[in-house]
Every structure is written in structure tokens, then in C-alpha cells.
Image 1 (spheres, rainbow, N blue to C red):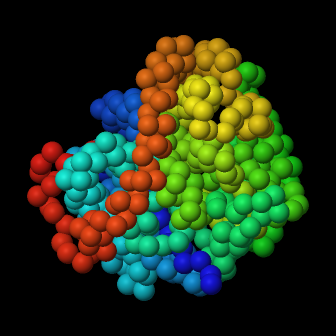
Image 2 (cartoon, rainbow, N blue to C red):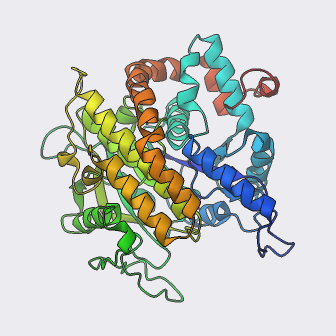
Length: 458
């Protein structure tokens, strides 16, 4: 019997962009707008690292193109949209905006899981004396949003899930068939393949990250002949000591070699298939700033499993221009890599876990998680400050590498292990809860009064 997967799409939203005029064009940001962007940067480093959320007044939200591409697929089951925002003040408006988009796709079986549903879930958790799970299921971090998707899929009795992002486009009509290829099947080394990642390209069909020498975009992308050529890296002098892109591209190049499936050290959260036997047993880490997908590879390894990468299962990422986000990502990567190093070291004291070393995760992320990471990050931040732009942001990042990032890692690295100990039993209990099942399945109305009480969507 074939698998019956559901597609989970977290969709990220932020305040209306005041720089847009009626035609959707942009104007030069005002001083107050630049100040707001700075505040957003700080919030991202404090635990809400949504790289490029959609503005509420965006006339062409990427979610529309994503759903349009899905409507052409064969073998499609239910789609679950989980609404996340950068600011709780816009939660309801974001729900309404996504609901308007969903109404344009009556041919798709879409379940919207927004603020009201999340609030009702949290109220139910408190009633069941499981309030400790609220942070792990909130919609204010990438890891927690994915945990919420795992819970919803479990309650809905799906045997597998496919995570996509809302700014991705699926071209292959057999995408679902390729997603299920090998999943749940026995592998030669023993055990079963319980999770795998596909491959993601940019809009021109290039697999590699920034600095890899992009191919020129054509009028139409030949999806049967994606660019799998060796990356040609031209590193800026300011990145002499910060070589994460080199390591990422080397890992991608290895994944693109035969055979089709490889045991992987990376995963793409926007193209990730997980069997129920795994997502109900191993949770995502809500406390990692970004890269929760690669971190999930480590979590799975700690618990005796592996994630594979399938180079024939592909989609395109419709990512926006980077701009200021490059400084944001650098700061978040500092927190991420320092946190990851401390987490791996802490796990060595846990007798029930398989030991995972940085060397076993090379090229990426292994080369980027070491005791020298804070010093390398500090030097790189200073060099980027000199070379510009965004000097103030890089200056702050440099000093965070020696202070705040280490403090954050010390404070939170044990949180995941506490969550993981209770995750399998919690998922089983919640999946069998009649009240929660009726809320998620829409068999009875959600408790809108929860939105005005103490059980808001975090």
C-alpha cells in the first residue's frame, strides 16, 4: 500500500510595507522605516528569524504561485497551511490574508491553521496539563512551526508529511511520486528510510549557493536539465575566515553525484519528507535561530537514524533579493553555529544518545561548528564592517560572537533534550485526544475567546 502524505506549508507574514505605492512599486525608505527595519533585525536575532516574510500588502504574495504550482500535481492529498507572523499584533490580519488566498483555490483541499486554531490548541494543552509544550509548538520560530505541523499531521492520521515553503514552485507533475520514493522502505544497511530531503534550485535552475557563479536565466527554465555543474566560488576578501558557503556547495556537489540517494549531512526544510515513525518520535529544535532543517539531521542521528538526500526530487525557490538580509543571516548563523557546537558537546553527557561529532558532519555543517567559531565569526564581522555595507549590523554581530551568542547557547542548549524526552508520549496522547482532534479536523468551531485570554499564539 502506498503512502498517504500531507503537505505542510508554513507561511510567514510581516507588517504592511509602507514603501509600496498603489501599484506595488517601492520608494526609498524613510528614516522611521529604516529604524523599524533595525528593530526587526534585532527581533530576528532574539528568536524570530524569519528570513523574508511576506508583507501583508504585498500584491503578489509568493504563496499564490506556490499553490498554483501545487494545483497541477497528481496524487495530492490535504495541504495544511500554518500561519506564522513576525508580530503578534498582525496575527488576525495575516489569517484573513491567507484565507483570501485559499479561497482562490477551491480545487485544493486546504486546511488553514492560524491564530485561532493555535490559540485553541494552547488552551487545550493547559487543560491537559501539558503547557510546557506551548513554546515548542509556537509559531514564532522555524523549529516550533515545524513541530506544530508534525502534530497536526499526526492528529489527522497521515502516515507521512512533506514540508514545503511558501516561496517555492513545483514544476514536476510527479513531485508527489518522487517524494514518496523510498520513504518507509528498508535500506541495504538495515532499518528503514524514514526521512529524506529533495534538492532546491534558484529560479534559474542553479543548485548552488551565493558565490557559486550563477548561470544566466532563460525565458523559461528547463526543469529536465538543471544546472549540476561544479560550483565556481569567488569569495570576498572579508570572508577569508568564514567559509560556510564553500562547505555548503561542496556538500551539494557531493549529493548531485550518483547514486540517486545519499546519506546526508544537510536537509532542505522546504523540500523534506518525513515518515510518521520519525516525526512522532523526534522533534525539531525550537531554540535554534535558523537552520532547523540541518539541525534536524543531527537530532535524527543522535537518536540512531539518518536523513537521506534525493537528487531527483527537486523544486525551485523563488527567493527575494538579499539586501539587508545578508547581515541578518550572518548574525543568525553565528548564533546557530555556536549553539550547534554547544548542543553537540552537551549531548555527549547524555547516555541514551548516539554520539555525533562535527567531523562526521563534514563538509557542512561540520566545518562550521567548532571551538574556534566565535573567534572566526568575530574576525569576519570586523572585516565585513570595514568592507561595508551594513557596518553597524556587522559590528554588532562581531561582538555578539564573543558574548551574547555564547550566553544564548549556554542558556538554551539543554531545552531541546528536555523537549525530546517528552515528545513521543506527548504526540501519542494529543493524537488520541478527542477534543483536539475535533478542533483540527474542523468538526467543531475553534474557541475564539482564547485569543483574548492568556493562551494567545505565543
